[in-house]
Length: 367
Ligand code: ATP
Ligand code: MG
Image 1: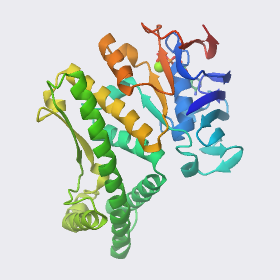
Image 2: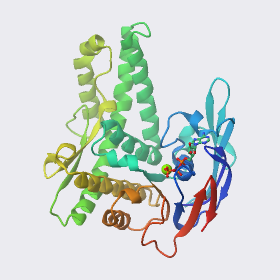
Image 3: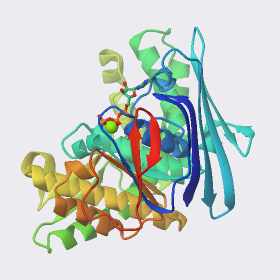
Image 4: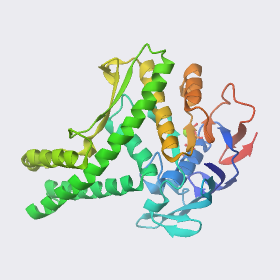
């Protein structure tokens, strides 16, 4: 897939922008605080409908104004699609609305119309950082690929919030209602766990293969699904049964501790090197190499699942990597349909065909 046009209005530090990116590699160079990450954030929103750096939509609207718009035209297999996302701020709240070809659509329908894989410096924490980062990688990739996953995850999270409120005492305790929440948690949570299990088996294959190539087979990366609730077999019956049983086991502890204790909201992705946990055992360089392998794998799995290459967005990340790792990463993904790369300086060894732009004070010019 390919983005043929991006237009912004009052998004972050951009007043107006109308840009026609090229197929292949687009490189945006500029000093700090000029609008490089903001542009990538806007492009990513066309895929995921959400910012990759904030949950506060109000931050997306240009200071002092009330309405931000991100639009894009994309060439996808099905034809040309026109995407729009509007963020409107008023005295009390901020509201995001979405359009496809001019028709208002719900978030769930907008999500994944185009697909993006982003790689930002914060991703270098994927190995050493908290499990929530690894779950986010799974959720963002899966939600773009698989509508059912998004729906089940949303259903799970809603029931989880309602249950948490009851356990905290924010709403009155009600045994019948709790049983209903647990029933939804098991149903939706089972779908989430099975989808993660399947996705991780594909991610594992790609990441481990790429990693073995890079290290000449001298080191062995191992990726596993570490579900909070272990299950015997990847079937609806086995997972639902294990989860239901676990919820009954922790029911008393949940009431005492006043919080939810079991379920896929506590899942993790296990990363090991030669049989040792990578975060505790691997050198910084080894951890970085594993992150790159994971990102390459994320890209490959998303491409192969839909038979269409997603957009690749690299925010300032090549400068964080030494030359060899940057080259290995780009070679690893083995050709992208279209990529957007930001940097403070033109990276070395850019292919001649790369389209170069300069960003200064929210103005983008070819250079
Ligand atoms: P760096 O190289 O440091 O990462 P950058 O070019 O990626 O810089 P951006 O993150 O895109 O910089 O931010 C550019 C500017 O946009 C920053 O000065 C930031 O304060 C500003 N900015 C962020 N949100 C808004 C907003 N809602 N309204 C106006 N300006 C904003
Ligand atoms: Mg930046």
